[in-house]
Image (cartoon, rainbow, N blue to C red; front, side, top):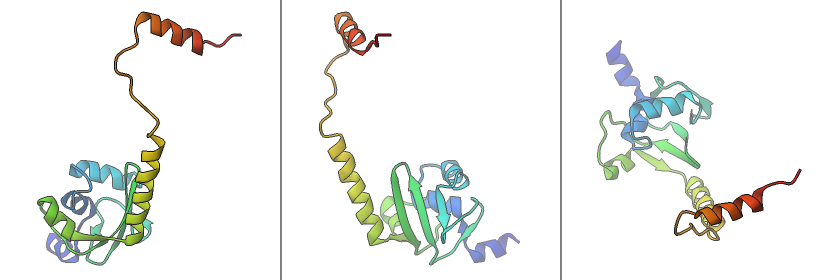
Length: 133
C-alpha cells in the first residue's frame, strides 16, 4: 500500500515543507488542517496526495499564493531547487505586490519612538487617553 501511495504522489504537508512554504512539516500540517491550503479549489487534509499539475491556493500570513505543482520532492532542498517544484500564477504575483505596496504606504507615516516613555511622558499619555465619565 505504501508503494501505491508513492506512485500517486506525495503528501501535501510534506510537499509544502519541501517547497519551503513552511519552515516545519508540522506547521504545514496545521495550515492544511486549518483551512489555509486548498487543493484544486477544495479544502483537504494534510495526508492528501499531491500530483504534478495540481493547483494549490496557499495562505501564509497575509500573503496568498496560487501555484501549480511542477514536481515532487520528498526532501527539503535549497531554495533555488525548491522554486523549481512549482510555478506561481501571474495574477498571484501581482496581487501580492499590490498588498505589499498597500502595507508599505500604510506604515509610511509611522515612526517608532527612539526611547521608552519617561514617568512624566506616561503621565501625559494617561491624562490624554483617560476618558471622563
